[in-house]
Structure formats: structure tokens, C-alpha cells
Image (cartoon, rainbow, N blue to C red; front, top):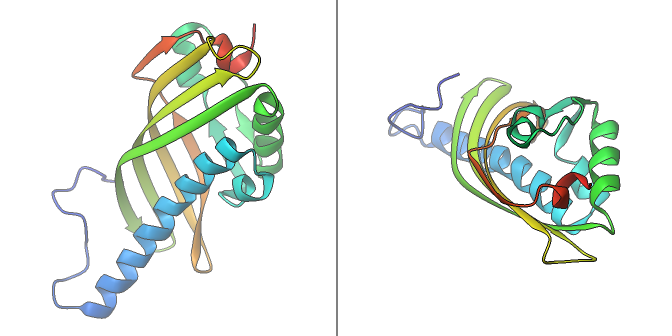
Length: 169
């Protein structure tokens, strides 16, 4: 799916209904990524889970490989939510900033790329932190009027700090 198009919308100019529908889809698609990020930052299980399809897959292995980390491929919404929140809750404070979203919609599926800057600070020792700039590649599916993440791959462009702030020692 092409997220390098030279325009944002595929709806024909003047087709107001199609333009509004596409803008709504794009807002809901981006919101799935916002729910993913804010759900982690707030440690809000319900919000975090609302970002994922039941059969979702989260692959952080490409990013972690940059510093020798070997996290598992996470499959299934419940596994993803439980694994990530258990890893961070009470141990790591996070903030995620999302920029440069590019979206392509094809019927009931969509492709999203974005840059995410993710800050991780150990709650017991805030001087231990890791700041990552990660390109995200996301496949989504329509679920009624909202969109859900089916597959997410997280790569890493750069890292500063100590990766133990993410995965522990």
C-alpha cells in the first residue's frame, strides 16, 4: 500500500460526501495509533486494548535488535496488552509523540506509517531513561465506525540513553 502518494486524499474534488467519509476514516485510523500510545502512557488497559483487533500482531523486534534486545513477537490483543502493561506499570513512565502520519485506505483495510518519539524513564530512578525515534508501519481493519490495529511493526532510527529503561536489566 502506497503511503508515498503526492496527495493526502483519494476522493475526487467536489465529491463532498466521499471527502467527508475519507476524512472521517483518516481521523479514526490516526486515533487507533493515539489510543495505542496514550493507553501505554496512562497505563489504561481499556484504552490500550481498544486500539487492537483481537488477532493483532505487534513486532518490536526490529527496533530492539538495534541494541541487542530480543523481545517476542506479540500475537493477540490480550497478549499484547498484558505483556506491555505488565512490563511498564509501576516501573516505567512513558510518553509517546506521533508525527508524520501517512495513510492509504482500501475499503475496509488501511496502511499507516508514522514517526513516534518514545521516552521511557524508570520510576525508581528517572536518570535512567531511553529516548527512541521509531518509524511505525501499521495495518488496520475497519470495525464498524472505528479502525483497529491488525499488525504493527516498530523499527528504530535512533536511540539515546539506556535501553534497560525499556526492558529492564
